[in-house]
Image 1 (cartoon, each protein chain N blue to C red):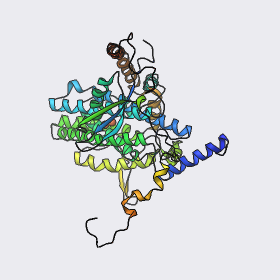
Image 2: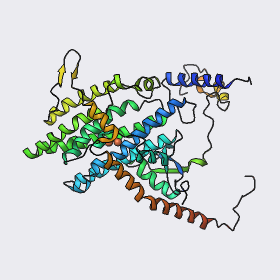
Image 3: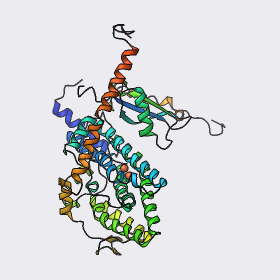
Length: 97
Length: 331
Ligand SMILES: [Fe+2]
Ligand SMILES: [Fe+2]
């Protein structure tokens, strides 16, 4: 068997800490296949009830944005202050708002 | 877009990197980073990961001879945690562009190091307690500040590890406290164990600051947050009252409270011994690496079988003769 082939592929692991929360990235691990990735994730990342659900995703299946802060991808959000509630002045005596 | 030379680009990237570190913000895997920063991190994280993995051996030595089922379950869980710590750290190291295969190969070939403490043998069951108390205790001192290290994945691994270390230290201390309530023979066993591990534990913080050439750069980059000597002092100050409560002493005639400094004075470990153990002539260096190599070699057929099985399942689900749906078409 070739040296490259027997390095198991890398998986990224996401754990839902408890019901009502999103899955959160916790790290990565190597596994021969998807089922093994889940089993290893259980042993490596949830030894103390850290999760109620696990996602395992092949690292090479993830599409990521560029890390460059100047990336135009995030720039449009910067000048749209009207997307935040604090942009709007409401008289102090208006309740529950 | 203006055409800039590569040197100008690099200067701008470096300025941005240094500004991020200066703000105590984190560097993340796909960010640009100076090559020396990357190499320093790979060396440090790999050494740390290898220490967790090799660190399973001295304690693993006692699993089959633990004195009760309770102690055996605790020790198994503790050693399993150390395997987990190694894996978190290898995972962090791999984000810097090295593969797990390379890291394992470097360890087995002796090209990367691990903490010198694990080259000392565990001669009595009390050593399990002493390692939890002093060795994991020293590791905690080292690791808590690293939770704020500048490289994101490393810091996140450390947070995860620190949460688990507190169990390690407490189970060790409780083990020793139980023995101290036992017979004279058991008390002597604890004292003898503490005498053997005290100096090697102090060495875990690395050489004195004056002889630690990398510290300054590592601190400037936010990889390290404290100097070796500061952490060693902190550890001594923490350990003295714990030893008193336990009823043991440390084998250091110079150990004394210094009112003026507000810290304990203490003697220096034998740094020649440290250098020799790091170079490979500690009592167990050869044994530790041989054991790790054997475990790796013995596992080869398992790794191969798992790949063969995974490949067979894929082929069964999508036979080669049938064209896969969507193949060749735009999706
Ligand atoms: Fe650990
Ligand atoms: Fe530990």
